[in-house]
Image (cartoon, rainbow, N blue to C red; front, side, top):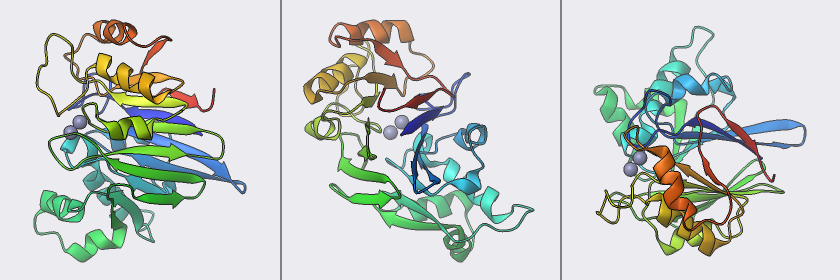
Length: 256
Ligand SMILES: [Zn+2]
Ligand SMILES: [Zn+2]
C-alpha cells in the first residue's frame, strides 16, 4: 500500500499545502487501484502531480467541512468539461449523507443529472465496510461537531488508520488497532486550545496511537498557524518512537 500526502494543511489551505487529501494506492491482478480520502481546498491541483484524476477508482469523504470535500466540485468540472470527452461511468463517492445536496448547493442551479452523470454517491454509516479493489475500508463515526468518520484502510499486507477530523474517542482506538501507520488529526495544541469534541492535540493523538498499538504515528491537519516543532515535542512526551509530520507530496510505502 502506498500513501501519498496530497494535502495536509489543517482547516484551510496553507502556503505549503492544500487542505486535507490523501491518495491511497494498492496493486491487484496487475493493475493499480487509486482511492483519494478527502478532497479539500486546493487538493485537486496537487493531486494532478501524482496521477491523472481520471485514473481514480473512488473518493472517500470523512465529513462535509469544506477543507475535506469542496474540491469534489472542482473534480466535477474536470470530469464533465474535459476537452478529451466527458468521463464515464460515474465515479463512486463514499461519503456522509447529504453530500450530493451540498455539492449541488455549491453550484446553485446546476442540473442534478449533470452531477449524477459524474458521481455516484454512497452513504457511509458507522461500521460501514466497502471493498474497493484490494482496499477494504471500514468507517467509524468519530468525535467532531458534524457527522464525521475515520477510516481503517486494509490491503493484503498493510493497515492505515486515518482519523479524519476528530477529538480522541474509542472509535479511533478501534480504527488504529495494530495499524502500520496512524495518520491522525493534530490541529489543536496543548496549552492553547481548550475546547473538546473538535480536534486532537498532538499529545492526545499520541495517546490514542499508543493505546491502539499502532506502529507509526504521523501528525496531520495542522493549520498554518501551528508551530509544528512544538506539536511534535508535545506528542513525543507520549509516543515512544519517532513522531512523524505529514509532508505535502511525500509518499510512504506500507508496511515499512
Ligand atoms: Zn478539517
Ligand atoms: Zn472538520
